Image (cartoon, rainbow, N blue to C red):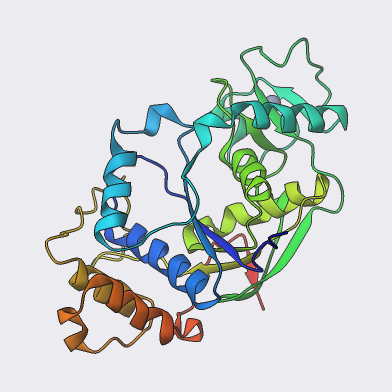
Length: 296
Ligand SMILES: [Zn+2]
């Protein structure tokens, strides 16, 4: 019998554009941490939001990872192949009487949902309304982030009953990620701090359906010179992969690591071996986290 490794990490990009520097830093952090712990590193393509996606971006991301020597274990999981599982999780929550249909417009909802449609009943799960999860009392979630320390959020105050299936019929990110982290047996999640706000909702969902909660570490968000987050949406420049070594060294430095300049002459596999051997996650910086979360 083969036992599961004690560490299974993952990199889970959305195919909204090619890999940019910010997503490389997140990929590299999760890769180095997994390899340092002799764990598995999985890649999952989060393609459940077609309106935001760019055709072929998944292949561009995969090719970039290969060029950077960031090879994954097992086959790549596409979220678009998991719709049945998401539907099953939705049904499970419905049987627990935790869902309600919401017909409010985005404008009516605002930042925090105040429960306007809580008393509404379903005619069918397939109707064109969004489906929200009814928060129980108390709805405060606290966890120890490996890089950011203790963080907590009161979901009722920060977001309210949140959407788990959208009005357009697409499953919400939170539901799909929770289903897939459980399905893939993910034990450690290392990702960008822009997702810390989602983590509270994901842990809340895990607790309701009695899934394991992985360990979380959120790395600082990479910003451009004017302090804006680098993302595909802000037209972050595509990585110049003519020197993958140079990309990897810059990404290691963004993670607080100290690769010497002469590593640039190594093959990417040797450069990554150096990164694993001298991986010092305690040198990853803290970051400013969302105002509706608290740190101790
Ligand atoms: Zn509503």
